[in-house]
Length: 262
Ligand SMILES: O=P(O)(O)OC[C@H]1O[C@H](O[C@H]2O[C@H](CO)[C@@H](O)[C@H](O)[C@H]2O)[C@H](O)[C@@H](O)[C@@H]1O
Image: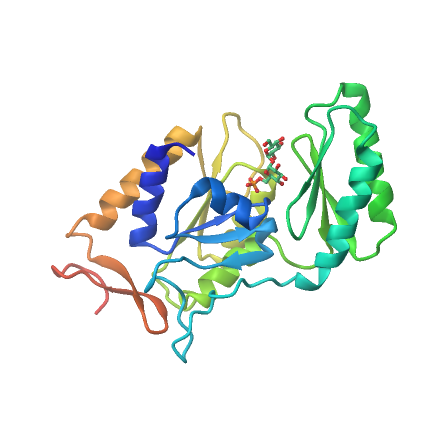
């Protein structure tokens, strides 16, 4: 992540609750994004933790931070995932260019750097391992296959969980915006379309089927869009400001007046 992008995302996060939802392990994402103002959901949303900044978290009724400890709906799968990681490392060690990545509650087997004739060997090895476990499933990404727990949890459910936990689900004027470029982001686009709580923005240089409402070409366009969001948030005339309160984030009127809710 460029320093410019980091600064823009930080500014967005200071104005609105902001999360990064990724297939990678949460600590890995936190490690390269390096912003304590964000919510992070790793392992396709199966590992959610709140901002490390006082006053921006999600407060429960008793005043404690709902995300102080990570929310991990598939925590009981961790020993099995550790075992699958070891099995795949063993199975793939003879395939040149292959690599296995432990993403905490899922495992990725990459074949991006394998010769073309070895791609199917990687996929077959993962299929074999998954076939031995009724409670696991295999998903596909770009030159990567993943092993995930068979739980009804994905980037879309993680997004819905965040919106609800932040006390924003019942607020009719809240619009959630989800930006993503991966096919696993379609779960979040679809969720927003179905719940009508916001919309998705697909990042793609070419047209493709999507449940996102809008498309932008590349990360530079995302950065430009986020900058406009920050400008809008900082404008005294918009009448809308999001602020953390004792039960979570809520909409409130701008200090200078405006058309926002009272
Ligand atoms: O953050 P996400 O959009 O959910 O991406 C999750 C995957 O990210 C990583 O894979 C991606 O980068 C790899 C190169 O670093 C590339 O080979 C792969 O095609 C990309 O999908 C991560 O390595 C995967 O485990 C995650 O599932």
